[in-house]
Image 1 (tube, one colour):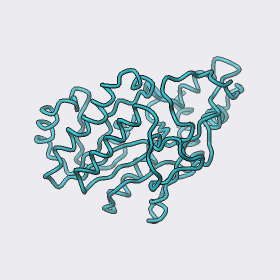
Image 2: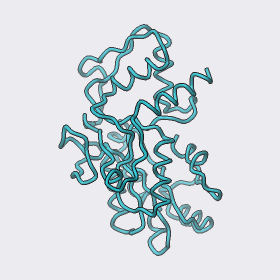
Image 3: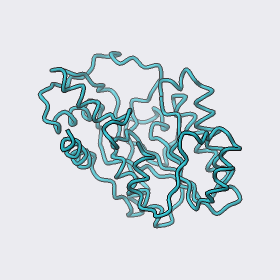
Image 4: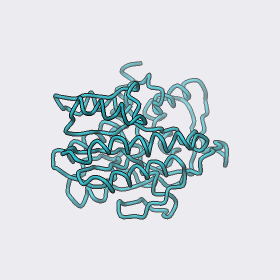
Length: 274
């Protein structure tokens, strides 16, 4: 979703991509490919993102998210390359009930988020020219995409009168195009470091998110808060993945909109394709 949207919307004239045939866990393949491309910027979007599966496939989680990142970083160590690492607001953990800022302590609770944080540490320890962008609840892209959360909710609600959604977890529904535009602002202004990069959302739960999706699709379906433990999860996911773009605000560079605005735009686009 993010990778394909980057190719379409980032706006660079000379853009290369490594597809699924380029295994980032294989250091020889990584170095051979990057030595051929000789990039000025590397945007690292590859990851093992299945939070539930990571709890079972622990080796794969660390191999892809941590060691795969190390392989890419190794190429950059002695070169003038901007390394952009896509991370998650889910890494903050459970220490707060309020939205997290970049200056809050990180205490990830799941294998997925631990492995992603290890990737962050690798970037910070070995590079000086980097952007670590913590985002969350990304949506967008083609409706046929396997992980298109918004369109899947449309399909689900189109076939029933009632659907259920989790009311216990809060976060920031974030449009992938807004995220890419914000990334471009940071690149263009030669900014480095760690940034939260999410659409503005205050105490928005999955239930609120899904309810707004159904409302914007004009579907005659009621969204109900799911009973406790209806959606049983293997991963001990934090109930608070919400964050604010604190550093972007301080720098006067925050262009991320309120979450409802891009969601409405995206759903109107999807409706035109139905």
